[in-house]
Length: 379
Ligand SMILES: Nc1ncnc2c1ncn2[C@@H]1O[C@H](COP(=O)(O)OP(=O)(O)OP(=O)(O)O)[C@@H](O)[C@H]1O
Ligand SMILES: [Mg+2]
Image (cartoon, rainbow, N blue to C red; front, side, top):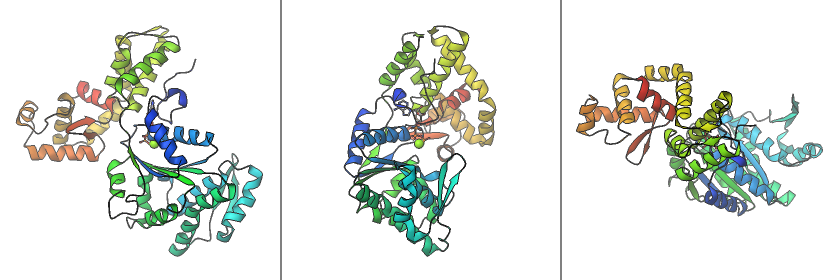
């Protein structure tokens, strides 16, 4: 039997918990041709939500296209990948060539069939900056033209969108070009999702092209009780007997971060299978946690070694005090930390390095396993 818990990839519908309102709203917005910004910290479930929404939109005959902006090494490479995704979306293979000639012929594209029948599309004639700008204009206009020619709506997801900023060294030219193109595309819904909230928020500032371009969705955590109930139901459905409260214990230990919750549940499930036991209880959970900490020891050790001494102190205090009142005299005395401004600087560095995240006035360790490692293996 397959492990019902999935982490490290977009979750299939069967492992997708809650997010009903978000899904409903995102799907409706895409179908209505809105340009949606979707923002959350890493591993909250943006990509999974977007794929669910695209599946729902596709059921309504919409052409769905996804591109992960951060996976391209240059602006022209992004344009090529984006163009390819657009022209091949739900297109019969024998039509693709003609389609490309019709839509992109003026740019003298080169087509190649890569091993594994992947089609690659490139524009070798785009050499100068002006060529690339022209290419961008054509590619960014493509969704609107495709919608018109095929008489279908489009839903376009540009994931890890914050990476667009790096293509023009901060001049915002790319944002301008994209924004200018999409505002005329009434039949095309867009979702721009990004996992660096500060970069994404900055993109929405008054002086930037995407200011007021469309609705903004900020993804929150999944309610802990729903996640816990889902875990227990899945254990049960796959023939295991979860002890009462084990779902809540997993969610809590995983800091209720969707990725961490599914990781811990997945590993607990595996261990139960290997041990041949039916019952999943707290002892089991802690045995799995110990195994995971051992497996991650080298990598956590390296992270720890990279920190300065004041940062180590601030991190330990954040773990042991659950991220609260870290600048207060009490906490600083208890953990032998230096002055408040030094602690503040250490915390800021830890946030910059993605070790800690700020939630309201609290500092939480981003990786819940690392949090447990710091709590148990450092002094
Ligand atoms: N709705 C959900 N229900 C259950 N688990 C989820 C859900 N959304 C996400 N997860 C869990 O979190 C993991 C990360 O999800 P996903 O890749 O969608 O997040 P993301 O925000 O796009 O992350 P990244 O910042 O790494 O791109 C998934 O592999 C899955 O384990
Ligand atoms: Mg993602």
